[in-house]
Image (cartoon, rainbow, N blue to C red):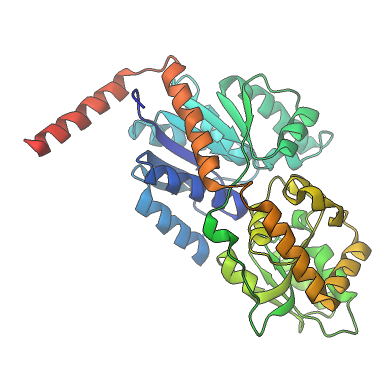
Length: 395
């Protein structure tokens, strides 16, 4: 395709969980397509797993990986952070800014304001988890409405995300698209639990929003059976969950482990439990289902879209009794649990692919670059410079 080539920065705050997975997949695949891409994110999260992902991104991102401190809660520091994003994007002649999550989306759109860049936003749940009546929700939703005017397209990773946005914020005044998260073919290879696997596994951020406390309470109700669990992840509520283990007398039955690649983590438990109170369109559910690992999860967010015709097995959030019963059934009838997991994996395959996700998002970038009245001079100068360099090499 002729015209201006995309020079893309993906901006997110916390490089954790599904947002990090999404950005990593999107950025590295775009780089393999020959697109100049970079990443801007917070510097506080610095686990070994995050460092490994940052190293992987650095190998692919020709525009670099730029990290600096970004506060979780709104404040005056957000203005300086957005200005810093603008300086980074401008110094690298970026023509596309794609914000991910509430903070990343705000920084990208503030940074691109009056800069004649293509601007995209993927909420990933983010601010949509707040209640419209809560003080924080009112602040975030007002900001979302304001920032729509500086957004070329909002990309939702599920129909649920779009419906939630409309119900809480209103119908967007900018174009929208639903583009589901996708997986590679390799991720549909089954993962088998190891010989020392625990009965149950939780994998994800250690936040109350994810229902880890519900999981621990349901685990305590499995007594007197000597079931074990492994919790893989990190997050702001880790100390509280460790304390809850002590209060429930689970300290000898629950093992906490640092974040690790999901297919490695899936070997640590025979049944995955994900009792989230809220979700967007979680990668961990997609990956677990694709790997044919038995999964107990909740009817929240876009999860019913993943389960399709089998969504009747989902449970309500915050229901300790229902979760405990589902865990007991899966643990006591592992053959049926494994059969159900294989059937769900078959139904999922082919519906959610990485190639479709990246192609559709990149096509939106190219459409904006070909139709939006951008300040083309500096990009034309860049193309001329690159052509001169190529000519000199061939001379």
